[in-house]
Length: 303
Ligand code: SD4
Image 1 (cartoon, helix red, strand yellow):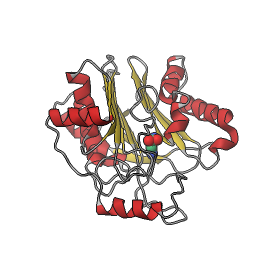
Image 2: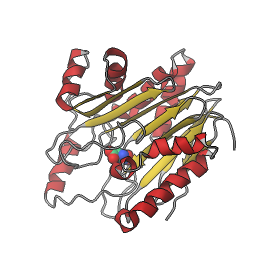
Image 3: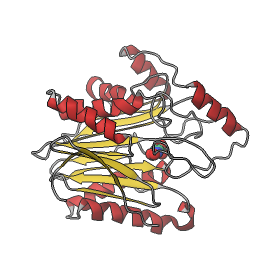
């Protein structure tokens, strides 16, 4: 189907985020207001173990958040390794609107959040803490594919969820996007993934469209994945072809190193055409059309 998507986001929990974004826009919010409202939904959900409150911690037991928000006028704000704050995307927006910078990290980001009046909240839920204590028994860092899907269980029984990347356009083709995550479960302290890095986890461009990524962020950052998808679209590729190109590029570049690794890309062009592609089967995404109807779709995969 060509040309009628308005909002897309990663994973099945993206459906609720899309609905919130749609409602915010209908109520008169800007595109930035809408993508922020969408991203705020999984951030506040304690059953979602990869975004905000309830996210799985790093290996020191600290939940640290990464987020970026941007529009197609060149406005960008991001935070990385933010702590004790539920709505990382809203702090990212404050970085964009209230500082001369595009990215604040760690202690500085957390202090900025307090200065801006964002409440201090312990993000480590008892359930996430128990999962971390369990993980410490082996301390084996081997990210599982597709743990983000609600209710999805790995063969080992682990239940996990992850990052949301959300893209929204106006019928006249203007774009904004948001990406927010607690990152990879049990990552090293100080690790920053693709999500808050402009051009890796998210990219939008005027008169072209946008792209966002999920999965093992190192494989996305390595190739500035979302910027590459948008560049392909700018050169004439469809969103689907552009997502396939970057995934094939990663696979070719990395060979055996990406065995068992999931990376997924989601893109939408200015006409509302949507594409998605991933390394391994299992990546799903939510699409909301211009009348507000939301569907969850399954991305085709390379392997
Ligand atoms: C990261 N890309 O921190 C994120 C994690 C993710 O679905 O997307 N999981 O590497």
